[in-house]
Length: 528
Image 1 (cartoon, rainbow, N blue to C red):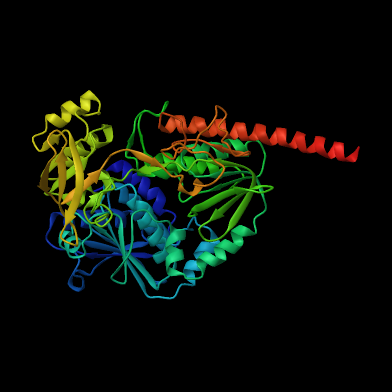
Image 2 (cartoon, one colour):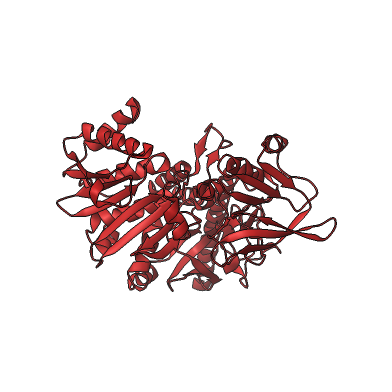
């Protein structure tokens, strides 16, 4: 099942097992079951601490492999073949179940151990989804630590009946004790906030007790990571507060224009960013949403849990998110046929008809990718011509199952109350309304900056919500700087965001130095 190179790498990892683990297999006569059995045998052959048990007669979901620590009673299951992006999830589950230390804050692990159960988590994924492994691995950690918690990863493309029955149309979709729990990216910290009612208040108290920073970075994408590193290298007290490390880059599939790196993927780049940031003395606070910013003597950042962080200077690098259509039905069917990530959710629409809204590079790339999975793709572009690169247009037009409609204004997304069943668009040349029957709508119409929390503040925004910055990254609020996709920087690129983060950090440091001199002069004047 595994090639020689991967076996060699896995063998080195399995040397870290401290306790016996059991691989419990539930198999049928399918090809995937045979592959899963082969994978289990490869793992078994690499360590004398691994054994295999057949549980086919007692399990309804097949193929399935449970990673069990008999001593602790922990259970982590994979329904389907945990390869692709989920292979790392499997390796970590083996290590954690086998007693290898978990690289998480001890306070979080203690919080997990204290949870009462039972909590039976199930996560529907697609193996091409780059967001899914983060959620799977967070829940696997919980299951490895607390025997009252179990977790099963389910390959949605392999268990279509379950997907349809539970109306799963976006991944990752998490259920707990049979009920919907979350959809999309969610961190371990935020999972704990949802299952531990007192967690948010305790966390807010701890955060509010932190002393003032010299430089506080809001956002942990490429711009924020760069700003934090440049700040920390100056030897000043630096913090970074964000919802998650990497921001939108974590959802990016292929990156081929990051200079000096021929090709990489979003999660790999995010892992590198986080490692680099944590190499320095930076106070990293993730799973935190900022709700307001104001200036008194210091700049104050309020979080949604009520905590307030203070700093002499602040760098805003909150990035951007997918722009929504804003038409009837979009919000109602979000996650039930309306999607924004073709790589993540595309496999759930295998053999079905879908539409892509938007004829730019992202829209046409999405159409090409989806055409290899779904029955048919209809691209709707508002303008009279596509905006995508010519090479992408040629590729899309060469594919038999892609239709492109120009001058098309999407007016409504329709459904049956549970899921999408079509959309209505207006032909702009004739004002004629037309309908298309389909199962999914992928919206690819650009980005909107994450700056709503700045509305009404002293930080000036453009009509589109972008933070207006000067050449040194400064904004209209003294001591507040900004960088990246949330600003008026015209080119939204990873490498440009990183440069902007460095510029903003250096600009903020210069501000702090001048502020210090100004404070000293004022003190001397008062003394005289």
